[in-house]
Length: 261
Ligand code: F6R
Image (cartoon, rainbow, N blue to C red; front, side):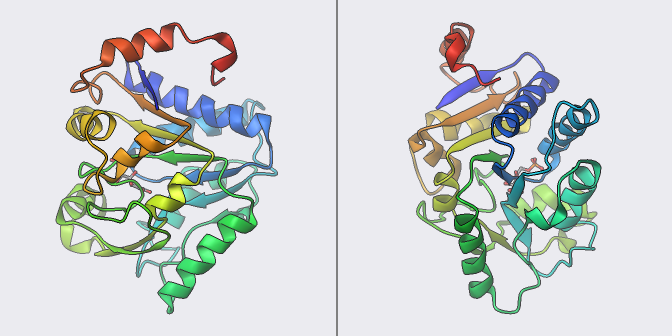
């Protein structure tokens, strides 16, 4: 696990955008695993800027998103399909047919979840998975107590997650109680993982995930077992880490051949 701590939020977002750019430039037909949420909005703006500057093309790229709310149609402005189209896909040269999210309206949910896993496998597996982190430690919607070997399935959101996302919907009562999410095991199968966390509201959980024990009660902590994970943080989200000095030292002294972009 590599921890990169930047001086500003903007720098953290820019590093993540550059890692994605360099993945797609190195392998145009990459399968990207994407995340939604407030943290990712600036990353997607950066990718749009790279595209407009002719520095990035998604023409052969496919994507799979981590999750989708149960019961929200793709046209609902809080659905994750709507978010992805609005924040990224509609502004770049990606073929929408190559972009995938779980179907939150599926009548047979277990069949839909199996189909999603099959889709990821048929596309050759995820080259790079982008992650945010919930204040309760979730990645995707793998809430505390999720099996660390879980695959795509339905999860009931915690009250904390509903409160975290309430302001986006307008009211906590409007947040769906269920989501379809890639499992922790699905995420762990990605070749490379990049987790971005910014702001002081994430400081406690980032420290638990990065330096605490591996536990199903902080599902992001399993990333300590992933062979190729990069955690990108700003000063605020890194504030509770004990080994900040070492992470900075290691980054400053990284051999050129190991650099991400
Ligand atoms: C979204 C997702 C979630 C978010 C997390 C952080 O697809 O999978 O795990 O990344 O809830 O959300 P924000 O960025 O809004 O703090």
